[in-house]
Amino acid sequence: MRCKTLTRRFEHILMNADRPPTSAPGNWRPAGLFSRLRNALPCRETLAAHPWLKPVAHRLLDRQLWHVQHEAVARGVAIGIFWAFAVPVAQFALATLNCVWWRANIPVAAGMTLVTNPFTIGFWLWLAYRLGSLVLNAPPPVALADGAGLLAWLGSFGAPAMLGMGIFALCGALTGYLVVKLAWRVRVGVKRWRRQNSPRTAATPPAG
Image (tube, rainbow, N blue to C red; front, side, top):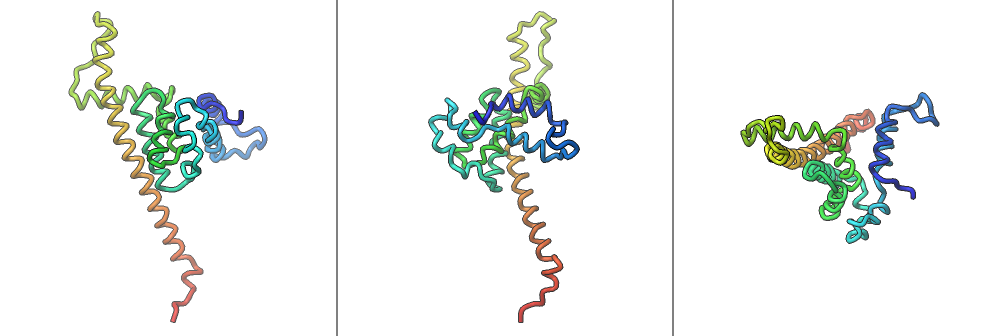
């Protein structure tokens, strides 16, 4: 099948990201990494065949959900970041369903869910725990060495960590959306400024 699973393809990307393509030695460029990341994401047909997504399979084939448009991209970034921190599993499927409802870019949302992955989840949980403890003014977690049970340790660690991950989900989604919208406005403004100040435009005499 043309489209492989997301996990296997992403692991292959990570292992070969710093290597130049064998077909073009010496010509490796950062664009090659972005191409690999894009190819790691499942295609529309693969998503439509996913058991969890079959109820909305016909909508997943809508080209507008895969088209690069600034509003759809901004929504995709927000959705991907939100589900990356909101739940530990099924992030990709939930982000896809959210994209169908909110008319967001599915590949962008899928890529942003990779913010939390097996290589970074430990760091994010530690940071979330620190933030949650600060908000709740929680005491340090009980130590297993002091005779505390596993459930007691998880309870003292879990509540601050869950709160922190929730804050990351909401604040990260909002920040991501605003950053994309701001970047698009800056890009449009720069293009307009260049067009107005190009030599050809400056040499054109005013009408009348």
